[in-house]
Amino acid sequence: MTSPSFLTSFLQRVSGPLRSRKTRVALVTVLAAFAAEFGIGVSDELLLALVGIGASLILGIAHEDAGRKSAPISPRPTPPRGDPGTRPS
Image 1 (cartoon, rainbow, N blue to C red):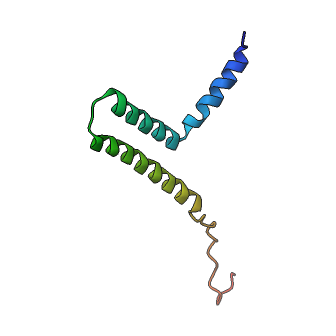
Image 2 (cartoon, rainbow, N blue to C red):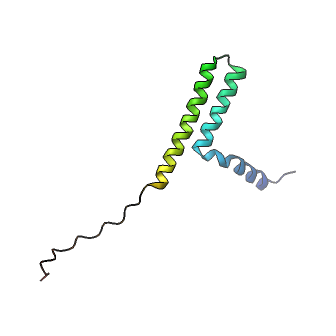
Image 3 (cartoon, one colour):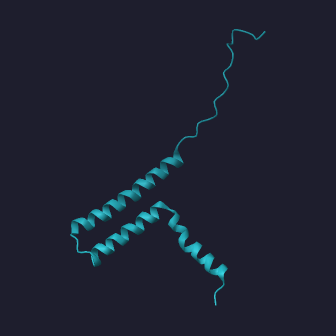
């Protein structure tokens, strides 16, 4: 018999990748493609549209993630200095 900690660990490991938006979109795209191919009688154009939209979403998310990682980090603003021609009294 399996212990509850093993089952919990297994479920966390299996569901861990589902935290990624790209993984969820890919999974939904594949499931929609299988449903359209084997379950629902749809045209080839709709099937290609489903896969194309899924691929576009994945590429958009990847582009967004890459932009977030490469965005420059602005330095802290330096406090204004006094006019170099005057001295504080």
